[in-house]
Length: 115
Length: 114
Image 1 (tube, helix red, strand yellow):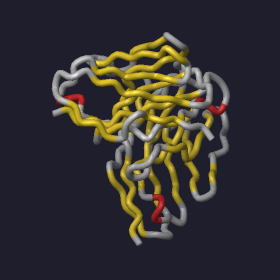
Image 2 (cartoon, rainbow over the protein chains, first blue to last red; image 1 turned 90 degrees about the vertical axis):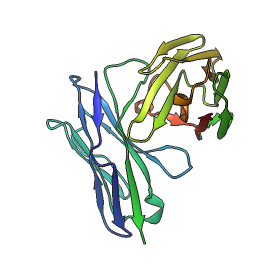
Image 3 (tube, rainbow over the protein chains, first blue to last red; image 1 turned 135 degrees about the vertical axis):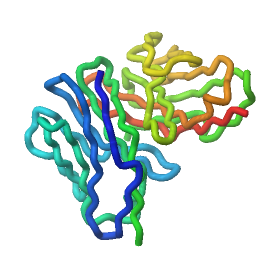
């Protein structure tokens, strides 16, 4: 069974600075997908970024990028130029080796961006 | 845009009541999921469905059942609500193939059982 661990329950950052959220996972699968989801306060969860394990290049979406270390089973999210709207709960999630699109989620990290 | 809707944002029920949480998606997705979200525990999968009338247990199915009579609708049933089922419930859907298995989430239902 896959496990996903987010070891930082809470983090904070000043507006315009950079912050990195950590995620590690455990799997015996060779091909899989990793995701970062964002859940703003009282709002719907949305996908931030996706990484396919067979792609060596780290995924990037505007101010969001990942550092994917396959051998270390690490998948961190870097947010550059943090904005107040980045304040949210962030979940790391894993898909692989299962049917029907089941995801395994980490515990979540609450990120607060301060003005 | 994919839209996943849930029947209620907030719900208060009494212990022992039968509770229905409904979820509807409009993108013809094959897969639908019910999670509960609790602080420090992340999202835990209760049940999922990969086709009409097809369902499988997730990680924490005890005390819950589900129904999927139509492709777009997936219901979560608490047969006899208990206080330890007070939680945030999230519904999600995803296509079987393509799009990297991204799941699309509803707004959530915060259920309080008193």
